[in-house]
Length: 326
Image (cartoon, rainbow, N blue to C red; front, top):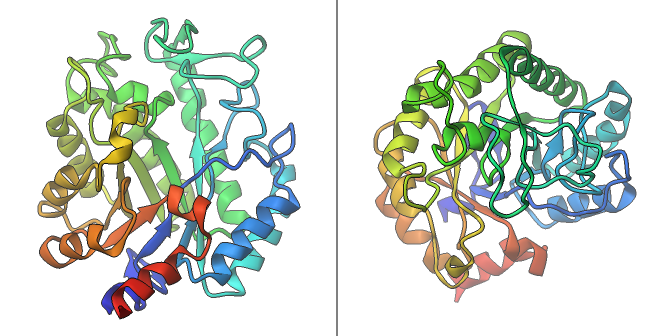
């Protein structure tokens, strides 16, 4: 079946349509250095025919760390360790993308010492952290941090970089009216709220050339007065028109009632895929081939990401194949 055959995500040739979506492992060192455990995990996934592996989110700033034992990409000294990982994964024909992130008030591994930034100084309803509202100087610095991280990703031998704009971290707070109450050109309408993301993308593109740049975005906040599907569609269309290489669609991961549902964000993914040519990756609530085939055959959504299934079984791709054979 075509889903198990070679294809392209933008300019990356991949061995199938299946992606290991970014999943926190909690196996890095205190300072974000990858360990042998992480290398072994990614090697196991590559051996098990995962076409593309997206690393767990890797922090770009040395003044904050969203979660303890999280991967980091905030200094050049980490590059050599990541080169060992990418070389290992490539031995098995898989591709590997690094996801990069700047945290915010939704959580900090070391909140007593972290400098916590956000579009607006609003206490987070879950963490109870009140961040510092970013000035233009802070915004410029964050853009520069993403650019430097992107250069390290490329130097480490990864096949691309994914900007994390979902799950309540800094960039997803900018696109959300729940957290972005700014009155300047970074707040208000959807075009303003996506501005920092576009500025990061263009600054990275200038430095990285045609190196693949992906993004993971919330398709909505799934809350009153929050980011809507229509907001997301307009933002994603802007990113597509300006050359982003792939868009992974996610949502508000705190809505745990969704755990019994399937293909959580397929409506947004199908709608967007019908509007743009940029590859769309649908992630969330995909647990068996029946969740995938009808979407693949009846829409322009061609790529599918998985998190929990690979935690349960690193040979999940083989399980999907066996479902086809039965």
